[in-house]
Image (cartoon, rainbow, N blue to C red; front, top):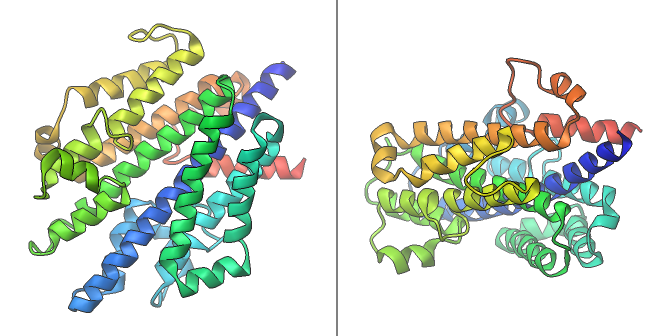
Amino acid sequence: MEGTMMLSRVADHLYWMSRQMERAENLARLVRVSEEMLLDDATLGRGSAQEYWTPVLTATAMEASFRTLYPHPVQGAAARYLTLDQRNPDSIVSCICQARENARSVRDKISDEMWSELNALYMLVSSAEGADLLARSPQSFYDKVITSSMLFDGITEATLTRDEGWNFLQLGRLLERADMTSRFLDIRSQSMAEADAAVEPLQWGAILRACSAHACYRRQFGGEITIERIVDLLLFSNEFPRSVRHCLRRADEILHDISGTPTGRYSNPCEKITGALLARLSFAGPPEVMARGLHAYIDDLQKQLNTAGQTIFETYVLLPGEVSRHFPRGSRPDTFSDWQREQQQQQQQQ
């Protein structure tokens, strides 16, 4: 029993370390591009900052808490809430702090180089120097977060043993990346009705840049930007590494590596759920998405991604006796942040 608990806890820490680093990187990508677009809109005299940030906060599931903490937001409040506000458990600085805490808990399971890079990023974002850099040059601050996260991935690739710990670390990164890519699309889907036809290609181009997909899009489709082609690339591409389908395909392969079950079969609920979701993406395309509505399609996709993540924990991390305590019958959290914070609070109290 004790050995199983220790293995479960190691898997938990590695999974969340990776997932939180990926979330911090994606938020940095999102805020960086959003600030660029907001500056362009202000220069051209279009819209207000509040109108611009509302879809961003809604798509990232942070609007309600933002409105509570900032009932009368001033200029720059949304960007600060997403970046340095430690009251926001999913801000960039909070994600990096949580990733570092998880890394510290499994210090002997990761390489020295991984720890050094993550710790250096933590020291930057939590310091007065980091806050000063953000105030002076926001783009430089977000670039540092993105570059450090990508370097962390590269160091992990080059230094970590390919064992079960590696598999859970990859699962966290892939599921978070799939979720965030879908949220990037959802930002534009929620404001499509009032979009200015003249600036819509610029706004969709910003989403492509946030996903580092602009060059790939041009190579595959040319210069004209359309919603259908963006959906095809970011949801259904089997080759682009940040597409939802690619991430789920890799996650499905990793789950089968963990269990030893041949691909195409399943031996537990999480393999069944991810396999079904992957099949759905493999046999669909932009016409089905546009017919249903982009926001409705993404909303359902995110619920299924949450279910996949929950089932992974029920299968591999939580002991059978703890499942009902954390996830009572008939309930399912929209995200894992509350559950994860509960786990971390328990660890700090020990």
